[in-house]
Amino acid sequence: MSSGKVAGWAHGEEFVDETTLFSDDGVLARARERGSELGATPVLPGAGALMRVLAAAVHARAAVEIGTGSGVGSLYLLSGMHPDGVLTTIDPEVENQRAAREAFVEAGIRSPRVRTIAGRPRDVVGRLTDHAYDLVSFPAHAPHALDLLEHARRLLRPGGVLVIPHALYHDRVADPTARDATTQAVRALLKAVTESEDLVAVLTGSGDGVLAAVLRG
Picture 1 (cartoon, one colour):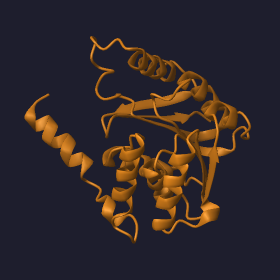
Picture 2: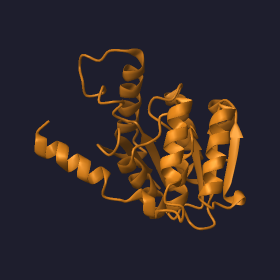
Picture 3: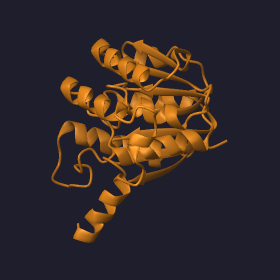
């Protein structure tokens, strides 16, 4: 990659100043720090900004996030959603959700706007209502990602948006020598999205890569 391309990517990552998104200008930085301590890799600013824009574009009133982590992605989604929108965020790790709730309090997010559910994602999403959500998000390297994709298509309303961060998986997806199981699984997920006739998709380099798709009406 040329130095100019690297500089352009870096500029894009810093284009949105995340310290301006909430009245507490350090809330996202602290959430990132807690995520690092927990081993829950947070989305980078460029990816978060794109998630925020997509939530705003569909005026999201109901969204599902699989993989709460320390709440960084959640905060970006909430900042773009309708002021009365409700985010259902799912994570199997109770410690992650405890950290995320701390971030929500610091950000001044009203408790009715976030529904945190601890449990196995495939089990939880299986109980959610069909075609009731404006946006669904899960990380590309999530376990059982192909199953989660099918659930996402079921949950989204026509015109709803699927958002998949970490879609380039530490730049390994584009590296033909990377043949580990997780990278292969991410590639299979990207292929499944692009081959879905009911999804209109794009892959961007924001953050660690974001795959976004709209469910056709």
